[in-house]
Image (cartoon, rainbow, N blue to C red; front, side):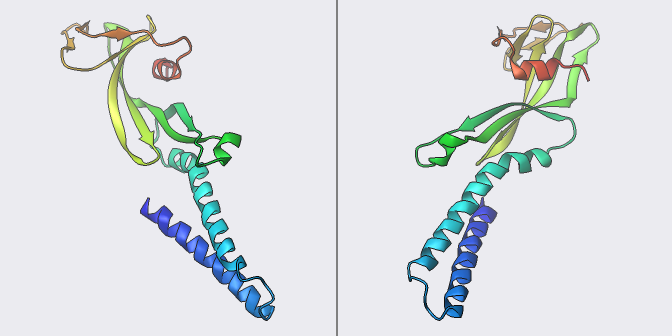
Length: 173
C-alpha cells in the first residue's frame, strides 16, 4: 500500500514536471491550470492501473500448487470506471499441494484455502471436502477424526451446484 502511494505521487510529480518543461519550452503559452490537471490525471491513472493490475500481479507471485477457484469483482459509485469494467478485489485459491486424505476415505480430503484481499492480509484456512457427496465442512471445535479416518462432529453444508471451490478442491492432480 505504501509503495502504491509513493508510485501515485511520483506519477503526479512526473506529469507536472513534464508539463512545466513543455510550458517553459513554449515560453509560457500553455494555460496555468494544465500543470495541476496533468498531475491529477496522472495520479488518477496510476491508481486505476494499480487497482486493475493487482490481481494479475498477485496471481503471478503465488506459489506453485495454488489454483484460483473464485474471484470477487467490485463496483463502487466513487469509482465510476468500475461500472464499465469491475476489477478483482479478492479471491480464493485452493492449495492443491497440501491436500490430505485418509486411505480408508479417499473421497474426503482436507484442503487449505487461501483467501487474498486487495487491502487485507492473506489468510490460510483448512476445510474439509467430501467429493463423493459434494459437500463441505469447516474444521472447527467439535470435529474429530477417528483412527480409521472417519469424521465425527462435522457440520456439513452442500454448496450450490457448480461451486468453483469444491470443484477445484476435488479435482484430481
